[in-house]
Amino acid sequence: MLTDSDRAFFRPKWRRVTATVFCAAWSILEWVSNEPFWAVVAAGFTLYCVWNFFYAYKDE
Image 1 (tube, rainbow, N blue to C red):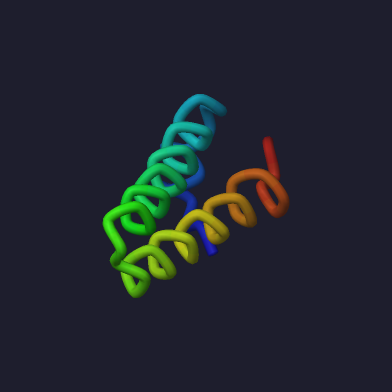
Image 2: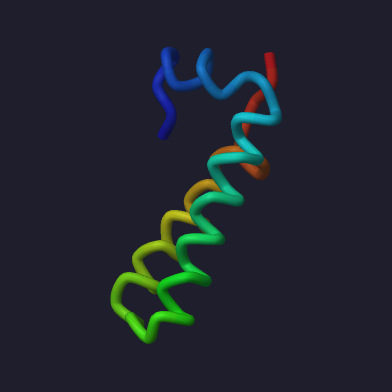
């Protein structure tokens, strides 16, 4: 569900990796802080990043 402008921004692999790692770290931080709701939200963002940036990403 990335738009063309999103694809252009996330074309460099380091940006896709950085966004995914940031979301994963955020999820871990929320779990450690005992905030399960926000941890699940951040985990969902992480899964969305993994799906869109690595599994379904069409590198042109």
